[in-house]
Length: 127
Image (cartoon, rainbow, N blue to C red; front, side, top):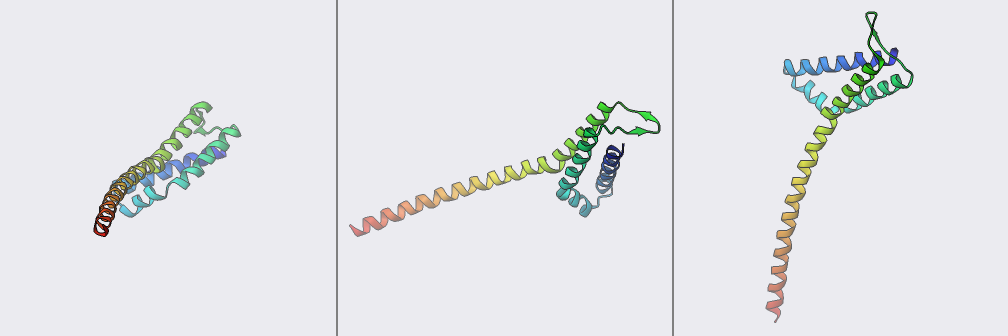
């Protein structure tokens, strides 16, 4: 019961802090969460895996939620966090790098054309 409880406490605390940084427009906190949250979600994923391996369900105020539903919600929550704070920004960085590589290819192509013209001009002057 302890591992999944730790997961849910940390998960809810994280999203309360992240939500408050958005609502109250605390830019430094939101920027920190956007850029540095992935290690936190790796730790959360470890708690979920340990909870699943040890068959560690959570009871809320004496009410027992089915174990499979708890695990599914936990895995979906960490999956969403991994997507939001790691995979989605990574995709944007890859697109940005792809554009930069395209610009570099264009520049190299232009330099190659200029070098070919220059070599032709030098060869024509020697003749």
